[in-house]
Length: 218
Image 1: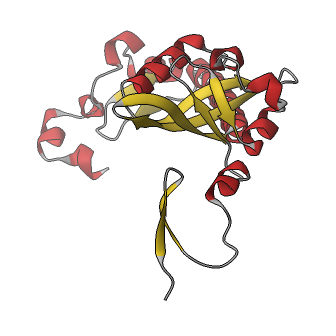
Image 2: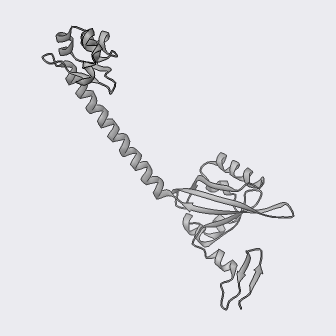
Image 3: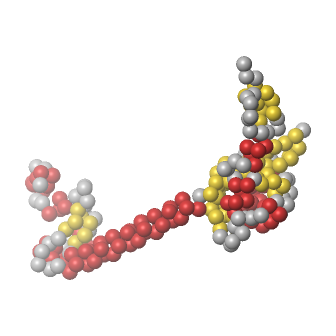
């Protein structure tokens, strides 16, 4: 029977089997970008995926203060404070400056490795969401452009309706409240826009017709 063995600090347990991958090799070559930061904010280790994502060589990244690579230092200070208080950080949105000057949008999840109640280093897992954010921004811009066009069309329509004098064109809401009143309605009905907008269309009916519920039948 295969035995479950302890291999701390990298894993609590693993299944004993031939030719297993050493845990440290798994972490170093993980496709998930990972880095460790000490209590002063210095990057003390980063795996291959982390370095490749931002384009840095190990000597350009490891040993440097993490704020050097973050676009928002205030956000990073809050991030480090939480870790020093032994609080896990989940989906922290940040902007990281790459070696080529590009700024990547990332989400950072992190927790703390400690010994004897002493902070040793953080364990940060980085996810690149640049493309997702770009698509989201583009979609928002398209929606805003569409909303502007719709508003412009509505303005042109309302202006056209307001100028018609031969026909009474009235817009009501679902409760029968008058929302607009054109020149034709003013000429035919005799009410000015100021007098009638906001009134219920039942005002056009005789008292006996209103009492019999005639407006609601039309």
